[in-house]
Image (cartoon, rainbow, N blue to C red; front, side, top):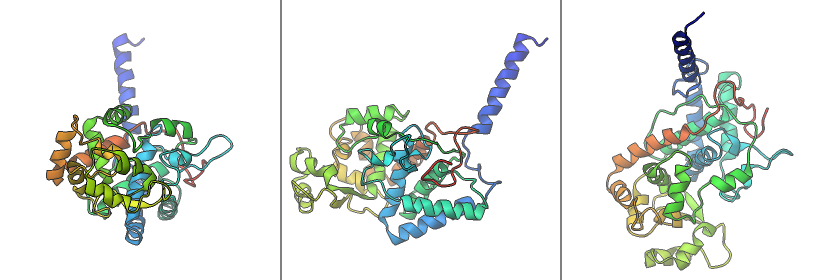
Length: 316
Protein backbone atom coordinates (compact mmCIF):
# COMPACT_ATOMS: atom_id res chain seq x y z
CA UNK A 1 0.00 0.00 0.00
CA UNK A 2 1.35 3.43 -0.93
CA UNK A 3 2.35 5.67 1.91
CA UNK A 4 0.44 8.94 2.49
CA UNK A 5 3.57 10.85 1.50
CA UNK A 6 3.92 8.99 -1.82
CA UNK A 7 0.22 9.46 -2.50
CA UNK A 8 0.54 13.21 -1.91
CA UNK A 9 3.57 13.46 -4.19
CA UNK A 10 1.71 11.51 -6.89
CA UNK A 11 -1.36 13.74 -6.53
CA UNK A 12 0.70 16.91 -6.78
CA UNK A 13 2.49 15.55 -9.83
CA UNK A 14 -0.81 14.76 -11.54
CA UNK A 15 -2.07 18.24 -10.71
CA UNK A 16 1.08 19.80 -12.14
CA UNK A 17 0.77 17.77 -15.33
CA UNK A 18 -2.89 18.69 -15.69
CA UNK A 19 -2.07 22.36 -15.18
CA UNK A 20 0.70 22.16 -17.77
CA UNK A 21 -1.48 20.35 -20.28
CA UNK A 22 -4.34 22.81 -20.05
CA UNK A 23 -2.52 26.11 -19.52
CA UNK A 24 -2.37 28.65 -22.33
CA UNK A 25 0.80 28.83 -24.40
CA UNK A 26 1.98 30.97 -27.36
CA UNK A 27 3.00 27.70 -29.05
CA UNK A 28 -0.33 25.91 -28.61
CA UNK A 29 -1.14 25.77 -32.35
CA UNK A 30 2.45 25.42 -33.62
CA UNK A 31 2.22 21.68 -34.33
CA UNK A 32 -1.45 21.29 -35.18
CA UNK A 33 -1.63 24.30 -37.53
CA UNK A 34 1.47 26.50 -37.89
CA UNK A 35 -0.32 28.46 -40.65
CA UNK A 36 -3.06 29.66 -38.26
CA UNK A 37 -1.48 32.83 -36.90
CA UNK A 38 -0.19 34.09 -40.29
CA UNK A 39 -3.71 33.51 -41.67
CA UNK A 40 -5.26 35.60 -38.88
CA UNK A 41 -2.81 38.42 -39.44
CA UNK A 42 -3.42 38.41 -43.19
CA UNK A 43 -7.17 38.93 -42.77
CA UNK A 44 -6.74 41.51 -39.98
CA UNK A 45 -4.22 43.52 -42.00
CA UNK A 46 -6.56 43.57 -44.99
CA UNK A 47 -9.54 44.60 -42.87
CA UNK A 48 -7.64 47.40 -41.13
CA UNK A 49 -6.27 48.58 -44.49
CA UNK A 50 -9.84 48.84 -45.80
CA UNK A 51 -11.06 50.66 -42.69
CA UNK A 52 -8.61 51.89 -40.06
CA UNK A 53 -11.36 51.99 -37.42
CA UNK A 54 -11.70 48.20 -37.65
CA UNK A 55 -8.49 47.79 -35.62
CA UNK A 56 -10.10 49.42 -32.60
CA UNK A 57 -13.30 47.42 -33.13
CA UNK A 58 -11.46 44.08 -33.10
CA UNK A 59 -9.47 45.06 -30.01
CA UNK A 60 -12.72 45.98 -28.26
CA UNK A 61 -14.32 42.62 -29.12
CA UNK A 62 -11.58 40.76 -27.25
CA UNK A 63 -11.91 43.10 -24.26
CA UNK A 64 -15.69 42.78 -24.08
CA UNK A 65 -15.48 39.03 -24.52
CA UNK A 66 -12.98 38.51 -21.70
CA UNK A 67 -14.87 40.61 -19.14
CA UNK A 68 -18.01 38.44 -19.42
CA UNK A 69 -17.24 35.07 -17.81
CA UNK A 70 -13.73 34.94 -19.26
CA UNK A 71 -12.18 34.88 -22.74
CA UNK A 72 -14.46 32.24 -24.26
CA UNK A 73 -15.91 33.74 -27.43
CA UNK A 74 -19.33 34.16 -25.80
CA UNK A 75 -19.73 37.67 -27.25
CA UNK A 76 -19.78 36.22 -30.76
CA UNK A 77 -22.80 33.96 -30.17
CA UNK A 78 -26.14 35.04 -31.64
CA UNK A 79 -29.34 34.68 -29.60
CA UNK A 80 -31.02 31.28 -29.26
CA UNK A 81 -34.17 30.16 -27.44
CA UNK A 82 -31.88 29.37 -24.48
CA UNK A 83 -30.17 32.76 -24.11
CA UNK A 84 -30.05 36.34 -25.39
CA UNK A 85 -26.88 37.43 -27.12
CA UNK A 86 -24.33 39.61 -25.31
CA UNK A 87 -24.40 41.81 -28.41
CA UNK A 88 -27.61 43.31 -26.98
CA UNK A 89 -25.99 44.37 -23.69
CA UNK A 90 -25.87 48.12 -23.08
CA UNK A 91 -22.11 48.34 -23.62
CA UNK A 92 -22.35 46.42 -26.92
CA UNK A 93 -25.69 47.33 -28.50
CA UNK A 94 -25.19 49.11 -31.83
CA UNK A 95 -21.51 49.65 -30.98
CA UNK A 96 -19.77 46.25 -30.92
CA UNK A 97 -18.69 45.61 -34.50
CA UNK A 98 -16.28 43.60 -36.61
CA UNK A 99 -18.19 40.31 -36.41
CA UNK A 100 -18.03 39.86 -40.17
CA UNK A 101 -14.23 40.16 -40.02
CA UNK A 102 -14.12 37.47 -37.33
CA UNK A 103 -16.20 35.26 -39.64
CA UNK A 104 -13.69 35.88 -42.45
CA UNK A 105 -10.78 35.02 -40.15
CA UNK A 106 -12.48 31.84 -38.98
CA UNK A 107 -13.15 30.71 -42.56
CA UNK A 108 -9.56 31.37 -43.62
CA UNK A 109 -8.03 29.70 -40.56
CA UNK A 110 -10.19 26.61 -40.97
CA UNK A 111 -9.23 26.52 -44.65
CA UNK A 112 -5.48 26.63 -44.08
CA UNK A 113 -5.69 24.24 -41.12
CA UNK A 114 -7.92 21.80 -42.98
CA UNK A 115 -10.41 21.63 -40.11
CA UNK A 116 -11.75 23.70 -37.18
CA UNK A 117 -8.78 23.53 -34.82
CA UNK A 118 -8.49 27.14 -33.61
CA UNK A 119 -11.18 28.46 -31.30
CA UNK A 120 -13.08 31.69 -31.90
CA UNK A 121 -11.81 32.85 -28.50
CA UNK A 122 -8.20 32.41 -29.63
CA UNK A 123 -9.01 34.19 -32.89
CA UNK A 124 -10.27 37.21 -30.92
CA UNK A 125 -7.09 37.28 -28.82
CA UNK A 126 -4.77 37.13 -31.82
CA UNK A 127 -6.85 39.56 -33.89
CA UNK A 128 -6.67 42.10 -31.03
CA UNK A 129 -2.86 41.90 -31.01
CA UNK A 130 -2.60 42.05 -34.79
CA UNK A 131 -4.94 45.07 -34.89
CA UNK A 132 -2.74 46.98 -32.47
CA UNK A 133 0.35 46.12 -34.53
CA UNK A 134 -1.41 47.13 -37.77
CA UNK A 135 -2.04 50.58 -36.27
CA UNK A 136 1.58 51.06 -35.28
CA UNK A 137 1.44 49.72 -31.73
CA UNK A 138 3.41 47.12 -29.76
CA UNK A 139 3.36 43.38 -30.22
CA UNK A 140 3.30 40.59 -27.65
CA UNK A 141 3.15 36.81 -27.55
CA UNK A 142 -0.50 35.80 -27.34
CA UNK A 143 -1.07 32.82 -25.05
CA UNK A 144 -3.31 30.33 -26.84
CA UNK A 145 -5.35 27.20 -26.20
CA UNK A 146 -8.72 28.69 -25.24
CA UNK A 147 -11.88 26.83 -26.17
CA UNK A 148 -15.28 28.29 -26.95
CA UNK A 149 -18.29 28.55 -24.69
CA UNK A 150 -21.62 27.09 -25.72
CA UNK A 151 -23.68 29.81 -24.06
CA UNK A 152 -23.77 33.55 -23.44
CA UNK A 153 -25.38 35.94 -20.97
CA UNK A 154 -26.70 39.42 -21.74
CA UNK A 155 -27.58 39.88 -18.06
CA UNK A 156 -24.01 39.15 -16.97
CA UNK A 157 -22.62 41.42 -19.70
CA UNK A 158 -24.87 44.23 -18.44
CA UNK A 159 -23.58 43.76 -14.91
CA UNK A 160 -19.83 43.45 -15.54
CA UNK A 161 -18.84 45.47 -18.60
CA UNK A 162 -17.42 48.91 -17.74
CA UNK A 163 -19.50 51.86 -18.94
CA UNK A 164 -18.39 55.27 -20.26
CA UNK A 165 -20.13 57.07 -17.38
CA UNK A 166 -18.14 55.39 -14.57
CA UNK A 167 -16.01 57.32 -12.08
CA UNK A 168 -12.58 56.15 -10.92
CA UNK A 169 -13.81 54.20 -7.89
CA UNK A 170 -16.30 52.27 -10.04
CA UNK A 171 -13.64 51.56 -12.68
CA UNK A 172 -11.10 50.33 -10.13
CA UNK A 173 -13.70 48.01 -8.60
CA UNK A 174 -14.86 46.81 -12.02
CA UNK A 175 -11.33 45.81 -13.03
CA UNK A 176 -10.54 44.38 -9.60
CA UNK A 177 -13.46 41.99 -10.04
CA UNK A 178 -11.65 40.64 -13.10
CA UNK A 179 -8.36 40.21 -11.25
CA UNK A 180 -6.92 43.37 -12.81
CA UNK A 181 -5.24 46.17 -10.85
CA UNK A 182 -5.03 49.94 -11.29
CA UNK A 183 -2.02 49.69 -13.61
CA UNK A 184 -3.99 47.28 -15.80
CA UNK A 185 -6.93 49.70 -15.75
CA UNK A 186 -4.87 52.65 -16.97
CA UNK A 187 -2.83 50.65 -19.47
CA UNK A 188 -5.85 48.90 -21.00
CA UNK A 189 -7.82 52.17 -21.08
CA UNK A 190 -4.98 53.32 -23.31
CA UNK A 191 -6.59 51.18 -25.98
CA UNK A 192 -8.75 54.27 -26.46
CA UNK A 193 -5.80 55.79 -28.28
CA UNK A 194 -7.47 54.21 -31.33
CA UNK A 195 -11.08 54.30 -32.44
CA UNK A 196 -14.20 56.41 -32.23
CA UNK A 197 -17.10 56.81 -29.82
CA UNK A 198 -20.77 57.59 -30.31
CA UNK A 199 -22.29 60.88 -29.18
CA UNK A 200 -24.63 59.16 -26.71
CA UNK A 201 -21.61 57.93 -24.75
CA UNK A 202 -20.07 61.38 -24.20
CA UNK A 203 -22.96 63.86 -24.52
CA UNK A 204 -23.38 64.34 -20.77
CA UNK A 205 -19.67 65.08 -20.37
CA UNK A 206 -19.39 67.75 -23.07
CA UNK A 207 -22.49 69.60 -21.85
CA UNK A 208 -22.30 69.16 -18.07
CA UNK A 209 -18.78 68.28 -16.89
CA UNK A 210 -16.60 70.80 -15.11
CA UNK A 211 -13.32 68.90 -15.56
CA UNK A 212 -13.23 69.51 -19.31
CA UNK A 213 -11.30 71.92 -21.51
CA UNK A 214 -13.93 74.48 -22.71
CA UNK A 215 -12.55 74.67 -26.24
CA UNK A 216 -12.61 70.88 -26.50
CA UNK A 217 -16.20 70.73 -25.22
CA UNK A 218 -17.26 73.34 -27.78
CA UNK A 219 -15.53 71.41 -30.56
CA UNK A 220 -17.29 68.17 -29.67
CA UNK A 221 -20.70 69.87 -29.32
CA UNK A 222 -20.53 70.81 -33.00
CA UNK A 223 -21.25 67.20 -33.98
CA UNK A 224 -23.03 66.01 -30.82
CA UNK A 225 -26.20 68.06 -30.18
CA UNK A 226 -28.09 68.04 -26.88
CA UNK A 227 -30.78 65.90 -28.49
CA UNK A 228 -30.54 63.54 -31.44
CA UNK A 229 -27.44 62.42 -33.26
CA UNK A 230 -26.81 59.61 -30.78
CA UNK A 231 -24.72 57.62 -33.24
CA UNK A 232 -22.64 60.57 -34.48
CA UNK A 233 -18.98 59.65 -34.08
CA UNK A 234 -16.02 61.48 -32.57
CA UNK A 235 -12.39 60.32 -32.21
CA UNK A 236 -11.29 59.09 -28.78
CA UNK A 237 -8.07 61.04 -29.28
CA UNK A 238 -6.66 63.29 -32.06
CA UNK A 239 -5.00 60.34 -33.86
CA UNK A 240 -7.67 57.60 -33.76
CA UNK A 241 -5.93 55.42 -36.37
CA UNK A 242 -2.53 55.45 -34.68
CA UNK A 243 -1.56 53.56 -31.54
CA UNK A 244 0.36 56.29 -29.69
CA UNK A 245 0.26 58.26 -26.43
CA UNK A 246 -2.10 61.03 -27.60
CA UNK A 247 -4.87 59.57 -25.44
CA UNK A 248 -2.90 60.20 -22.25
CA UNK A 249 -1.69 63.61 -23.42
CA UNK A 250 -5.35 64.48 -23.92
CA UNK A 251 -6.27 63.43 -20.37
CA UNK A 252 -3.58 65.70 -18.91
CA UNK A 253 -5.19 68.57 -20.85
CA UNK A 254 -8.71 67.62 -19.62
CA UNK A 255 -9.64 66.60 -23.15
CA UNK A 256 -10.71 63.04 -22.43
CA UNK A 257 -13.81 62.22 -24.48
CA UNK A 258 -15.57 59.88 -22.07
CA UNK A 259 -16.27 60.46 -18.37
CA UNK A 260 -14.48 57.17 -17.71
CA UNK A 261 -11.46 58.42 -19.66
CA UNK A 262 -11.03 61.68 -17.77
CA UNK A 263 -11.67 59.88 -14.47
CA UNK A 264 -8.17 58.44 -14.82
CA UNK A 265 -6.68 61.94 -14.52
CA UNK A 266 -8.85 63.88 -12.13
CA UNK A 267 -6.89 64.26 -8.89
CA UNK A 268 -7.01 60.56 -8.04
CA UNK A 269 -4.69 57.62 -7.52
CA UNK A 270 -4.08 57.01 -11.24
CA UNK A 271 -2.94 60.55 -12.13
CA UNK A 272 0.75 59.76 -11.79
CA UNK A 273 0.57 56.76 -14.12
CA UNK A 274 -1.38 58.71 -16.75
CA UNK A 275 1.26 61.47 -16.62
CA UNK A 276 4.01 58.87 -16.96
CA UNK A 277 2.42 57.23 -20.00
CA UNK A 278 1.82 60.63 -21.61
CA UNK A 279 5.57 61.26 -21.57
CA UNK A 280 6.92 57.74 -22.08
CA UNK A 281 5.59 55.70 -25.00
CA UNK A 282 7.75 52.68 -24.22
CA UNK A 283 6.42 52.47 -20.66
CA UNK A 284 2.84 52.55 -21.94
CA UNK A 285 3.50 49.99 -24.66
CA UNK A 286 5.24 47.62 -22.26
CA UNK A 287 2.47 47.80 -19.67
CA UNK A 288 -0.26 47.57 -22.31
CA UNK A 289 1.25 44.36 -23.69
CA UNK A 290 1.58 42.84 -20.21
CA UNK A 291 -1.98 43.78 -19.30
CA UNK A 292 -3.35 42.34 -22.56
CA UNK A 293 -1.70 39.01 -21.76
CA UNK A 294 -3.08 39.18 -18.21
CA UNK A 295 -6.58 40.01 -19.48
CA UNK A 296 -6.36 37.17 -22.00
CA UNK A 297 -5.84 34.76 -19.09
CA UNK A 298 -9.22 35.52 -17.50
CA UNK A 299 -11.07 32.23 -16.93
CA UNK A 300 -10.24 30.46 -20.21
CA UNK A 301 -11.95 27.21 -21.10
CA UNK A 302 -9.23 24.61 -21.68
CA UNK A 303 -8.77 20.87 -21.96
CA UNK A 304 -12.14 19.23 -22.54
CA UNK A 305 -14.21 22.20 -21.41
CA UNK A 306 -16.15 24.08 -24.06
CA UNK A 307 -15.67 23.32 -27.75
CA UNK A 308 -14.00 24.49 -30.95
CA UNK A 309 -16.86 26.13 -32.81
CA UNK A 310 -17.36 25.51 -36.52
CA UNK A 311 -19.27 28.79 -36.75
CA UNK A 312 -18.30 31.56 -34.33
CA UNK A 313 -21.92 32.78 -34.17
CA UNK A 314 -23.43 29.54 -32.89
CA UNK A 315 -22.50 26.56 -30.76
CA UNK A 316 -21.88 23.25 -32.51
